[in-house]
Image 1 (cartoon, helix red, strand yellow):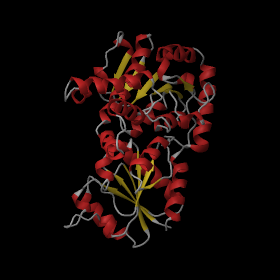
Image 2 (cartoon, helix red, strand yellow; image 1 turned 30 degrees about the vertical axis):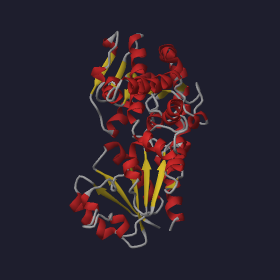
Image 3 (cartoon, one colour; image 1 turned 90 degrees about the vertical axis):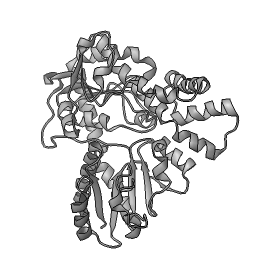
Image 4 (cartoon, one colour; image 1 turned 60 degrees about the horizontal axis):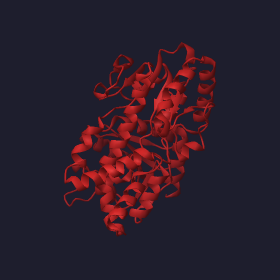
Length: 393
């Protein structure tokens, strides 16, 4: 079996994902090494003792190890993975539009793995030369695998949101940076997404560009997409903030764990309980104490977020919007509670009804746990990766 390299030491969440997959891959019979990007020289020495020519592969997240780190480049700028003929399997947890600059200089034996089917389609369209797939949605982790989840009625927090917040106005400098005509054009796209939140950013961008310019050459469209990440961030944080606002302003206490929430304006700020930012394990601990775990999808319209499956596996009721992929998994009132971005004013009513009925919440929490345990842990995702790296041997 292939010997596998994983990374920690950069983005904490992605390092945690790596540790979960590495553990599951070891259970499947692979030897693994964890390369700490914060300690490159000692890790490189360990790597060369571990490396076996023709039988070693790299599994990483978001281009870790291939983002121009100088300790992975030789004097001619050749990546170590190319020099040693190591295949790389890069799981990208954001939209590809954020990574055009990396996608233009990937290693030779590179596999791009998307967490959303729309991201896969984007890659096939704009980067057809890159090996793409398989689709691999994010998964969840049960913090205490040998322990029964605390019943919902005895949990400390009514509603929690684990994740950061950024004021949408932060991105206005990109919207207004050119002139009034461009400003109106960008706000037109934002308004379209706000009014039609089931659309993707690339779908809206293409429609608005063609309205303005007529038929746009594919290469020009590709360049335009890479310059529109602020549109994605603007609408993402607008809806995330509004979900918390709706609940707090309706008198429902929401504990938020993450950065930036002190900048969210609420009519009833006394219901917004701002807590410390936490690492992955810290977030899972809070989910173990949560009745309703609020999720707002980060504009993944045909994928999943780990917050959903983490909530389910740790015994909370996941209160979330959905996606095309999730529509095949989630069943409102059975394994989760679903709201829509189009009707966010109904969120308080949905949450209040659940909080008043601990039996209903427990039934949903139990259903959610069963759904996630049977198909949406990192061990399940590791099986897909195992088949992929062994097939390519």
